[in-house]
Image (cartoon, rainbow, N blue to C red; front, side, top):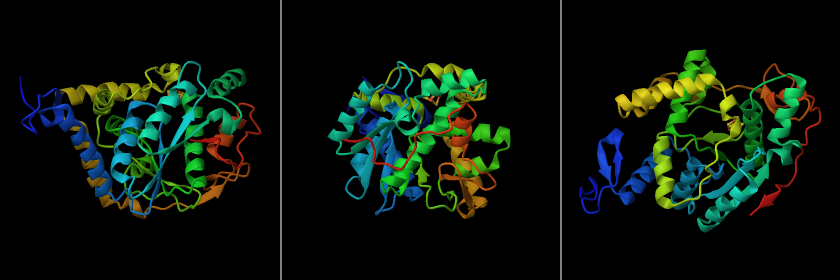
Length: 328
Ligand code: SF4
């Protein structure tokens, strides 16, 4: 039996294609943890006085973020978890949240469990049904994404968090970068740089992506080794997601398979290119939404979420400033 290329003692069980190494489970976990911590330190994502809210969906990426941040940053930083139940039949149910809550407890992290219905007054299924009735048809992901982004920022701000950590992995980041390039969306591309400034607005909490150099297969393997109870069900609306991302995903997997490590190189190169344009100096002033008072792009009266909901007949969404539903 082959021994691990790192410790040279334990049996190798995982082939890490991009580094061409065979690793034992322990060295694999250590490799992923070190890469995440190094990426955080490299870009100074978490400073010693930061309060970090982690957005955790109950999927594999969130579990890895919860695991690594709680083990490496809980002494120096206050960490809070946030789980948002979308309200999609058969998907991400309250029962699934219990596993996440228990794991967070074991790792010493308080977690808030809330829902789109709690914040808006309608679940994702109800919102999407209304959009079908009104014929103002966007994909469910458009409403879901806008709602979750709002809820994450709202809770982070209300809980006094100075950083909002999302568990986007390397595959997500590479796909988003290609799509931004293809669409000519320079602003969104610049925002992918870890040092990009958020708009100059104290109602927005700075986002960080600690897993941006970790492959999706690696987060899946990590949670499998740790035996975390991750949500297995796929969202039924995924089939209605924009097809461009599905095409980009398929093509990138093909390139990665033929050239192991190419996605890491791509994001590394992008970081270097974006360094030249000083994304940290880009700052935008924002307006306030006339309906809900949340930040919105300069020149707009309504924020994206109010606009989307209004277009399907939801004129008075439920969002008000209030105490989180459950802090466990
Ligand atoms: Fe929401 Fe779309 Fe993800 Fe489903 S696939 S959880 S609708 S963003």
